[in-house]
Image (cartoon, rainbow, N blue to C red; front, side):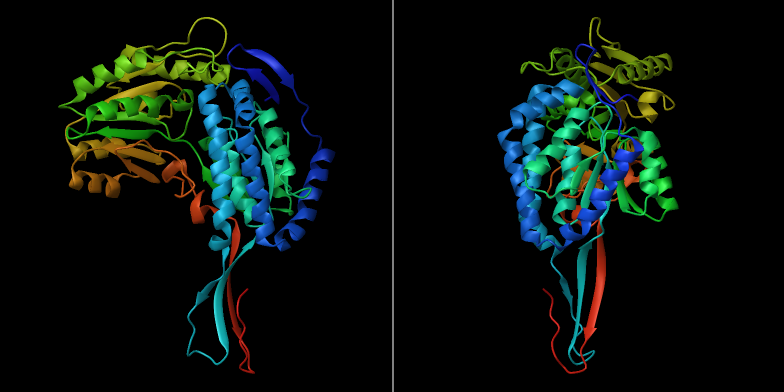
Amino acid sequence: MAIETINPSTGERVRVFEALTAEAIEVKLGRAFHAREEWARTPIAKRTRVVARAAEILEREKDALGRLMTLEMGKPIRGAIEEAAKCAVGCRYYADHSAEFLRDELVDVEGEGEGETGYVAFQPIGVVLAIMPWNFPFWQVIRFAAPALCAGNVGLLKHASNVPQCALALEDLFCRAGAPEGVFQTLLIGSNAIPAILADNRVAAATLTGSERAGSEVASCAGKYIKKTVLELGGSDPFIVMPSANLERAVSTAVKARTINNGQSCIAAKRFIVHETIADEFEERFVSLMRALTVGDPMEESTDIGPLATAQIRDDLEHQVTETVRRGARLLTGGKPRAGRGFYFEPTVLADPSADSPAARDELFGPVATIFRARDIDDAIRIANDSRYGLGASAWTDEGPEARRFAADLEAGSVFINSMVVSDPRFPFGGVKTSGYGRELDVFGIREFVNIKTVRIRLSSGGEAGTE
């Protein structure tokens, strides 16, 4: 895939970049490896200060960075600016909490030996390769980079090929924030260059957010060299609505949950599972609100739905919708690309798909919702869990026992009751099944790429060996 900026709202090529040569990649790998030791020895207060300054830049320049995101991948400008602001929040979170998260943890060994001390230390592992997607071009990177850099690791970013300017802006961000040379670098490369980088002894681990196929390939390659990976892959999140729910709130949130980022989000609600006693009313209200969405220029603040990121994504989505309807689903609104320039797709609602249709089995990346009907809570949970994905789930009920049942039985990395699934620095984020493994964010995220080292010290002189 060419490394280039194509404006999704017009289809016009804006800028083309040359992929790094093997020699240029070698230079960047050398810089990263050289930087890792000094950065690991840098006091954590200085490392977190760099990330805190990155937060200041993100907040100050959120409008310009938002426009860059919108230009490259088409998200509505309001959401793009909010993404830049959220990145500032994420950076501040780790700047404020990393020292606590990485502090040595004392283990009680009293009485086992005079002068003995035991503790667990959390130490950086070195160079981490981050393979990141285009749909949240800043937030996906920041939620890796902020904790990784605070922990004393060094980052190499292989961003999606359709957001090269965002990728370069992220390198510039950390450079201006004061990161030493080599601590965070962008690699403008194609996916064909990844295996050789993973094989390099100077790279310690990798993290990937992307498709199942990409995750499988990266995990297989890294596994060959005994290198850790964290994978955040696809999702087909259920959104369950029970009779006791506040239907007005559930419907309005359902539309937002499906269409956020033009429907191109792994944790967007995609399968709407509604109790049969309220299904007709939910369907009517939901379709009405989907039809009322404003589709247009993503640079306009009044726009609700912008273009899909690429022509291929639009074409793939059209095929999935057409095939789902061919297999018996009802098409309630939309269903096709919008005529004219750009990669637009109409807000679409499908209902009652067959179990073997794309809408029931696969991830639909775009503003397409699918409605299922459930007889009772057992049926709703069965439908929700009948998926190879397990990233997030949302359930709507005003009954405590139902809420607890959903929280316990839904197979997902996150379960939200009476709200939509979101990522938040304060909570771990990740999935189960083919949605991946490992966690980002919170204390769990920063400890994914550290050496969790057991230390026991016994001094025969009876002296004390404390931690730092």
